[in-house]
Length: 277
Ligand SMILES: CC(=O)N[C@H]1CCN(c2c(Cl)cnc3[nH]c(-c4cn(C)nc4C)nc23)C1
Image 1 (tube, helix red, strand yellow):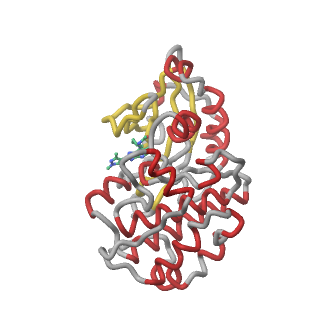
Image 2 (image 1 turned 90 degrees about the vertical axis):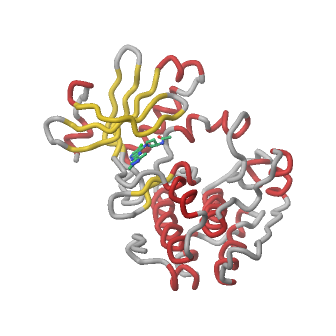
């Protein structure tokens, strides 16, 4: 609420619980705000590491953006504080954990589950683009699952921290559209491309341009070398949607509002954005 986002927080406001996971710059802990008993995820980042990687300004920008985004499919940032050595981000706690672990466990999702997730991500991206925020960097590692089974984009932290480094230094190229691997300027349509990659990965269990070597992935992306394996069996309608999103010319990609009207989404996505199995 408004009061919470203005309040000056400090560590004594929280009971710290178990570690939930760790990223490059620190750990994420389950925590409970003492006065309200509200459960949150407390992300602890080490200033020393942020300084080493020159990401402080990016962290400030992303905290600024994230704290103003309010959408059921975007993980809330309630506030932040810092001490001598660390920066603390007070984040919404997603009770059912990380989507990529669920995808690894299931190998791939049903068309109804995939379409439900893709539709809710499209709505979250339409909301972001409406606020001139792009690049929410939607890959499975940045998606969490809320208590009701709804998807939460939880990307603002690591992905942006590694924005420059990840694109050039390490991590996966798989989700980058041609204009980014060729490092020309890009716009909101990069998110349509990444959502197309994600839709493919939900249905097949692997991203479409995966290869052993970066150079091969790079080539497959810029050539849009899109192939659909015979297994698992996927409907033509799903392939049609993916083919309309993974288009080299960014202006020709299916706009997100048109995605929500695509027959595959209309026939398979649960309107509530919740996959009930
Ligand atoms: C890079 C990064 O921050 N990744 C993860 C770590 C935990 N974190 C969470 C964040 Cl930031 C928010 N909510 C979470 N819920 C969980 C979680 C729940 N279960 C049952 N298991 C887990 C794990 N994790 C989070 C984001």
